[in-house]
Image (cartoon, rainbow over all chains, first blue to last red):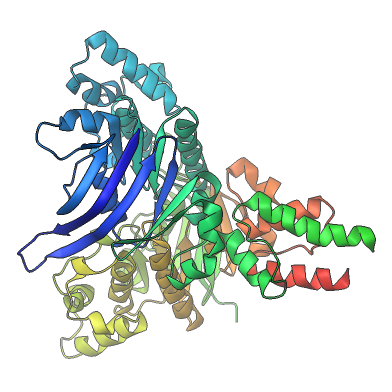
Length: 286
Length: 279
């Protein structure tokens, strides 16, 4: 599986006084097995980019290719594209609408034309994969659930389509700290199970701990693309773009003023190891 | 000066048909000029607590005194709401007008402030949140952080003594969060009493005091240093300490002689360098 952006530009409301170019000449390739984090300020074009991944938006210029095929070309089934590339919106729980949780999750598979038995099996599997117990929750109204549960139901609705790529727009936004941790664990589990993940996020700490690749957008353009180590190695540049970096990176930057050779620690464990070596290693000799 | 400006005495409140108290025997004292953080999981009673403080809801039992006035006293309720302004989570639900200046004017118009007095109050409020240059703009074209600052200006124009923030940074990006938090810290340094509900431990670390709520009760109160001293103690309420405090505690547990009480990156860097110099 490969999702390729070729010189993609998107301009909203062309010809109106509100005309605005949200992304400009973006080229990138999402490979099967990636856990790519998409970061940047509000208005940097992250969400616009994400919405091109399943043909929800069409490029004004350029092409988006899924396994070599232009997904916006005539004759390409949009339904098939959206089954293969699942998109979970920000605050997805606001899009629940059915009377029961089971019906809500079944909406997608039913539209794929699956049999009632197959649909039911998909619903059970999807709810289980998002950590909800089918028997407890299937017949309840989604509107009786907590915010975190509602968001899981919304994600289950996308998972039930068995997408190859899952695109999530800030899945942990607004959740409390434990809800955040659980959501990141969940997204991580999708990736572990073989789904390619693209996650829009503002939380550099979440990104550092989970992503295998980081794509930085700034003012509609792709400005950095690499592993967390590569991207955060240039933490000073991210800070200059007024973007957040993980707290451990900020600590590394501060300590490098004293010890230029102090490693750039992306994750908490690395910071622990580096500090332990410097402080305890020294003590052993003393 | 330790004048108590918010006082809750054994307060209970239950929503209709809930079957249990959303706020359960809570006592709380906030000094004039204090910035206090309230932490807790969703559903722990934080929002209910601040609604009790400005009289949006009234206690079933116990007493809430806001700026010396009992919220149950009908004669004072409008006064209380003017003196204790509230800012909510979603910036898009709080702005009503098509121009920033008019939005800030909204509260003033509703409370009968003389119209000749309004421009000066609006300008002062927008200036205080660094949004005066945007006075003639349309609110819907602003960033999240800017919208929240306009919402704060709308409250400031009412000249409150207390500001209550219910997860005011939860829906903002990191830059917007910093803009809003820094604005509120500055207002506090100029004397505003602030109650700051948040999920961000690093914000709580910068407040003077921290209260943790769980199942409607305040289960732990103290300075950030006291409250974040022990990661294990917060586990039952499913909260964690700020990242630097967690890192320092792990290193201490492994025998690294860092002092207690590290909460921020600055403190961590300083203590690490100080310890390295002694080795």
